[in-house]
Length: 366
Image (spheres, rainbow, N blue to C red):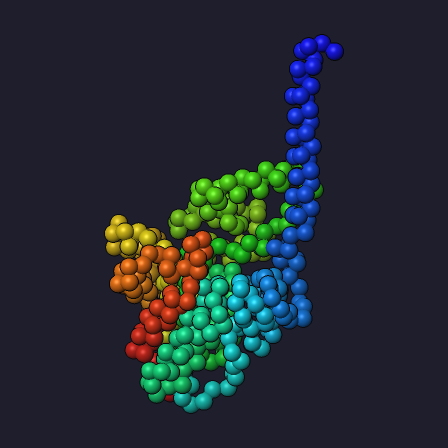
């Protein structure tokens, strides 16, 4: 063996070792991908689960309506996101409810996603539950019921469809819908299931790329089913090839605003008020004095358009800013954690207070 050949041996061994390591890691990543339950075909009707450490996949089931896709599983109970929770017989994270109403009942249906559902807070802490208590404490002569129809992952199209399916039977006196930034997006598990054995792609490299983007904070698309294109909302949306055609009508800014207009019509036909709640996540720029409004222009335009289109617009921004400023707090004080901007107990309370004040000026008992 020549001197040159001997000097190449360590390099060859290193390359072979790295190749074997890559192959092993790639194989492990593909096996994990093949077991991924984050797809619609893994959601099936099942007996209601109970226990600790439940995930979203444990507490939802498929719905045959393609504009709903899935729903909360009635009877599910246990611990979700570290908090006790239960789903009632009507499929809501709420106490058990009777559909029949008394003459003094004033029923409010609240539509929303994980913020309304109460992601990361206890059963009695989501703002619909707090709002019900505040309204009844006000002694306005009504017996207020505030029903929590929030479902994690729902977008506006799905939320409005949910209202349309129950409005006649449940006879609400008011509807509230909560806007959040991803209301034109789809739940992650509506993607086309990838082939974990596809030789044309590397799952390991894709995973590393996604994690790097998240850590660097450069690409919100790393969090879900989004592509490279942005629409007028400023958000990155889905590339059509990643979403089955049957669900494409659920996504996008135009579909979202169309759903709001549909809800306004549904409420008008029933002679009830429709409230559009803006519960913005990031107040950092406002607290730093960089702007007088923490919302992007597209959201301000949305509020103006929907306000002119029949909604009563309720924006909790000012109440939250006042509270944070008065107490020397920063934006994360109203988040579940520094890395999770879901509404925490404090902000649920502030949202409920803002809604209480507006609803008391609108509600009248029949």
